[in-house]
Length: 480
Ligand code: NAP
Image (cartoon, rainbow, N blue to C red; front, side, top):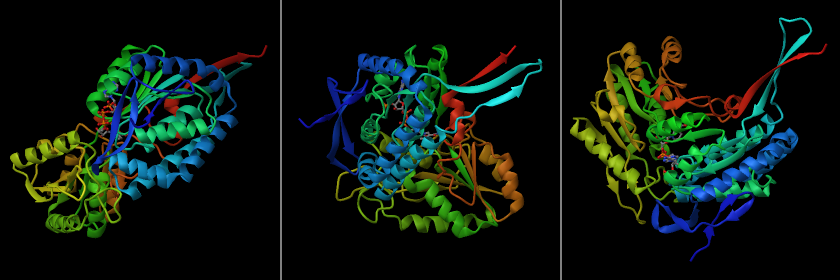
């Protein structure tokens, strides 16, 4: 039997009685590795180790925490080509996308190495003479991190780095489909000098490992990214057990295209936003809301660009779009393509299962036109390379349609009108607004997150991450 990548519990690499095969979605005969599947008892041991390590790590000098995060960031960046390849093998995004994501993970560790040294408080004059009021931030304790499969390196990085920077200890469960990138991060953290128990990795199913983390009274907070259904369940359980929690969930992100848009910019933003990374981004554009004067030109130009995209093995030079991540996701994408056709949407391009030299989950990116915002294809998250066009009269209708959704993650507009861009920026009901840019693609030092059904709790990334990973203490001191 091949070597099995073990869990990291209390500084030891610990095997499990079962393991899962990490399969390359570009080539189902390629086994990326065998990864341990932790059980509830091992998860409990990891939580105990994190709790035991917390007091010393919380008291460690910020310089020490900074040095470890900086070393981890340097190691990730030094290994970006190898780790990018691993990421593309296990998740299916193209090699440039994989290397780009790993680079971002390294930069996030570097950023939070700096933030560890910048945690500041505030001092107020009291209303009472001789009394000082100090506002300080403290770590929360043991944080449970639960991550999805679509960003196997960056999402773990943007949760682990701030958690550790501000003095918390961590128990992390990566998505079962992509444990390899998280295992590599764990190895790098150990090599960077993270003390035993400060970071623990427990791999396995959400129903076993995830449930054990969310239910444990020793976990103080949960940071979750994934689907709405799982997020809501986890939020309810976290609330019942008295934990702080943040949930980053799905999207149904609109891209408005107005008559006065630069057509090349609009088509470029649409192509990138909807189909790159195989459309498997929470910020992906899935609804193009297009005014009448540009509608036909936009649809024709986008379909032409889509026809020129190469869908193939993620590691092959020249591939624009890799495979869908799994059989389940492929079936979901095909199901929604069938639903859209049944609802009367017109398939303009793609939407077909493709065969390639290697057996993988290949799907040509799909574009539907003549859709209504009430159709399921426009209301439910597909999470694949599938987008639709909704024709509208004018800007006012476009804004109303853009906001007519239960989600609120990212919202975009392509226009050369300052008036409409400014109005949209103010009135789009989303956590992030993009003007003449794809809805996907964000900076790691800026706050990330949504509103409405997409998100719950504090923002991730940038200095705003401290609002989740620390708790505030207000001290009143009378010196006599
Ligand atoms: P998912 O099915 O909700 O899974 C997310 C994580 O939760 C996985 O690690 C999963 O484990 C775990 N999990 C499942 N059931 C659980 C339970 N009962 N208790 C605790 N943990 C449990 O989501 P996904 O399919 O991996 O990811 C796709 C979704 O993520 C999409 O909806 C996408 O929009 C969203 N997403 C959102 C953002 C954002 O920032 N807003 C970013 C990226 C992705 P398993 O591995 O066993 O399933």
